Image (cartoon, rainbow, N blue to C red; front, top):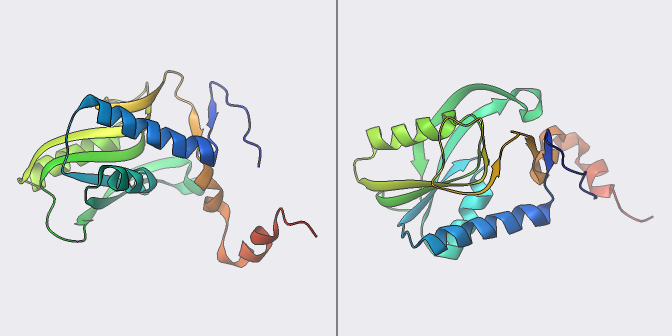
Length: 180
């Protein structure tokens, strides 16, 4: 599939560029010298970056579900929901935590998550944040970011194509691109 050309209003990201961006962000965090004990990814957008960070840095992965973009196939922002629990395989969220997400848009999610951690996790001693894309319209700056987006474009990520597919459409979807 060919990725459309990006403009000031739309940033189109291929799977290859998406994964390379996560790797470049991980390198940036590494080169900063900051050491962290755990990665806390914000699901859904931070799942893939969080998984990759957890593997590269060989630290435990924790997952906190958040959601604000639900309507219109994930293009309209609503109220922010933060999951009641953080999912981890063992232990508790503690020490130095790197919060990882795909982007900071308005800044509401990151601000509220950082406040949530401060209020509810006294064993967390330090928190920093890392995102691929940091939009100029954000009310908060992440500690680490790969790309600063001055024009605040809509970011078309490669996995968004799944937002409009339903189970009954999978058979046709899987046949797309097959040579007869």
